[in-house]
Image (tube, rainbow, N blue to C red):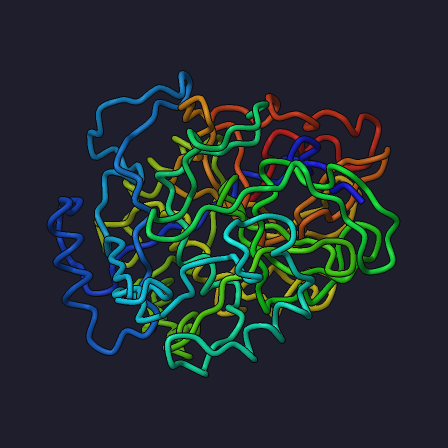
Length: 429
């Protein structure tokens, strides 16, 4: 069964709420320089168990043109400099240690060891769990399938989204993954025959480079399908995928079992500190008219008398998603209730929660940076077959035009449905 590109059918009605983040111990009067941010992070590293690897985004992109522009400390991702990716390949070439997160990874996705990475290396989620549990590699018996926060720690936004790529030669494509790891793309020559399905040729697209995790959605997606959150290092997204209908690449992890676990403290001044990451967050969210507006609001914010607020990058924002919660199971956003999340009625006239901007640009295969990343803390809606569905689940990471939600394919598709008036980022403080 071929899985369509769900982002071609996005509903972006709820985009416009955002959270901002600052370093917990910073009290500077002016926005910190690149060096200052690094120094603050290092000062906060004592006892930190959930270090967030920087996105590796070193370029700034204009909102309207999407072209590379000078970084001017406006608050874009590249204006700030965090824990830079630092990997060590083992002497035998079989494992890679992340020196920031203290996680060790299998270098290759070639699990059948035939010398190439293709559809034959993909497993269903339950099979992937078992594979990692039984793996013995480089003398290590303590492998596991990563959770979604562990898997996302590897993503680097120096990559370029290959969704629009029409060719078959992958050599020029830039993955959202460090070069020390092997390259895995969708297998255009694949034929799926397992798990009770009839043979289907061409089940993969180039962008079908999704990796399995242990993070199952606490609700369901699409047509009540049991769902797993996976990371795609080809298109640079987190989505929920039906576990019974799709196979995934596998990369096992070991070490730092505490990675991805938050430790929130309510500071009783409208801020929340996460001792695990060393970041401080605003407790409340707020409305924005577009991406630049979200960034400027954070840069000018003075909550709790801090002057160094900034819009978080996408990896920082994903760090506070609570994947044990969802609108359908908890009647809340996928975030710890220590935060205040704005609710509203969505396109189906159902109580829902918003999409939250991040400062990270989502660059496409042509170098166009007119889209930015966001996290769906509510349902990740899509319009398919004349129905509005939660296609990818609360906790997904997707992207949207920085200037106007109306430019997204599918944003105006559900004409006549309840809640149409909120297609233009209508949210409340």
